[in-house]
Image (cartoon, rainbow, N blue to C red; front, side, top):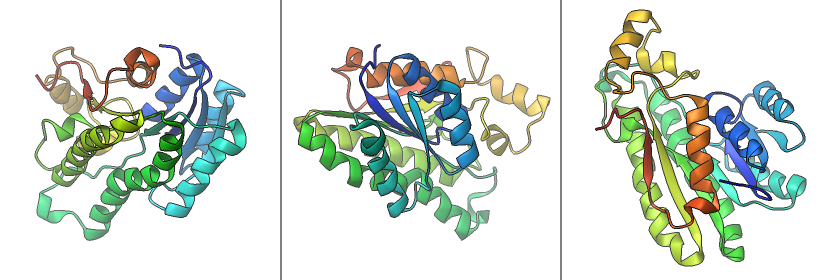
Length: 248
């Protein structure tokens, strides 16, 4: 699962699953743009993994920011081989009719529009060199939705469908597109999914996962490294569940 010589962008790379993916990519030999809205978090992760990483501040829902993010890969590392659309937001569990319009718009902007914007800037470059890998971070919520998270669930279902459609359209150009479906993990979003992070709510959720634990950043990093490596050169259009069996 070597990524030696590869250059990657990981959005939301300053914490949680994104940080796990950054660390795994660097360990596999890649150079990585750590893109995050939180400058301090991006710089912390980049500093922790050394000269193989470079921090960029970006709001993935803004086209101008995404353009700068992509350009930074070429400015800093002279190439780009892998794009990981990991940045995401959720909402507190609530009846579907209760979510505010501002919250709904933010979910669509970060979970959906950001993938579209990144594709507009990255796909032409990948087509030109007839290679490249895009990995979208979806969720088990897009496969086995839970009540009171309807609009988050729907956004991740969109990611899965977009991944499959992108894979079919871009395969003739030598590009691969896959997704990962993590179950909830030890990340800043866990409290949002649970509504309140208490031992009782954790136990209730863990009871739905056959392997009995949450996804970890390392789990995600391992899976992402495989799908983005040449070891997975025949795999495209897959939404791989990293969920301990929850969706069975």
